[in-house]
Length: 538
Image 1 (spheres, one colour):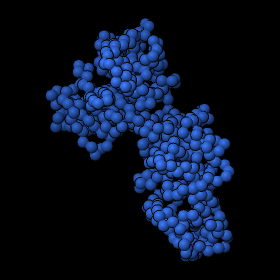
Image 2: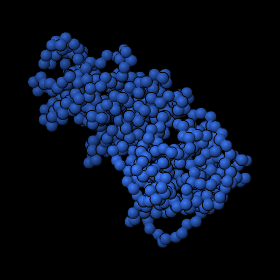
Image 3: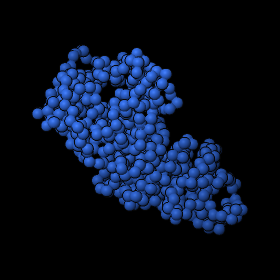
Image 4: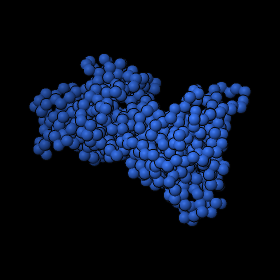
């Protein structure tokens, strides 16, 4: 329905039309009872006589009324004028979000936006239509998010015009579900009509941040179909991000805009943490540590064992075949010697099973090397002098390592290493798909730090009753919330391998006795997963 200026809707006087779309029409109106201006959203006429739609609309209004946050436009009430249901909302003055913006301004707006979305997620509300058109910047520079939660209550019809700014729309109703959202900002799972959770807002947040930085949409197209195809299959033009953008912003964008929701940030609060990090988390020049030079042949044997395990995993994914033993040797690169004594230089297989990272000595310097398993050549990673305890990121793009009293990471495709935090004497690290790194420090519980860098915090607690002095050798289990670690005690018989959790409410569980590292071996078809103790490694 359409209302004209001067008409009445209950006690409210309509002043002007603010916007229209498939979800209804929004008007600026006067509230004579409180002498203020408000925004009125009228339910689409097609839904106004549907009791289920109206009841769901009313339930949504009650939930949204609980979102008491300065970054979310307030809802004042759900009312009716005859048979017409409508929402009464805060009238937000200001400009709709547009890009490109200066880096500092874009980061500040993104930080406010993340805080607002986080507040909604904590109440169980998912926006599902986060886009620049639903974000306003007030004259005071404050972010206000509009239309929270309404998109999940309605079906819309596409309208003619610019698909990038199309209203919340439904393009397909299938047995799998109904597509809701705005084409250029939909998550891939949203575009496919699959069940959604808060990770769909994280994707849309990434698309908005990209637009603030690049000045164009991450997934634009000539029409709605093109936009949806780009969302599902294409990558953003990463070269459009300003060269001066700090690494933490680039990392955040990639973690938000990964198409597999399992690899995306798990919580929008992580985006807020990354955005709050100071610029000291940017790449820095590598520091050189003293030479380490004692070499033992068991390290090369361990490399062969790990490579064989990786090849076996690949074979187990295929239909069962006759069992066979796989042996594979990795010779040291020319004029180098692999590794030094101890578990801190055991080679590391990438999660995708395609690469091996190991430390090798050349010309008196120990550095990390990476070898593709389908290649005979290995490549040195400059800037990794004196590196120990290499471990991979879940996407196999980065290697974490320790050097010169720091925890660092390096992109295997090139570039200098990035210092994440101080690390002192250490005992290994592990990296989950949510961007959390758990690592060991001598004489302390396990520490947790963001893969973007920051100040670490304790994630386990030493048990004084067992005379524990260090927690070491962490190893994330599947899904990335729980991890194996070894609790080292002053009394050897009290040492053991435990299962810990990032959830502070979960108590650690003893898995097996001993003071050696343990790793997790994925299950083969028909078999149980295995925890392998690395006897003698310590």
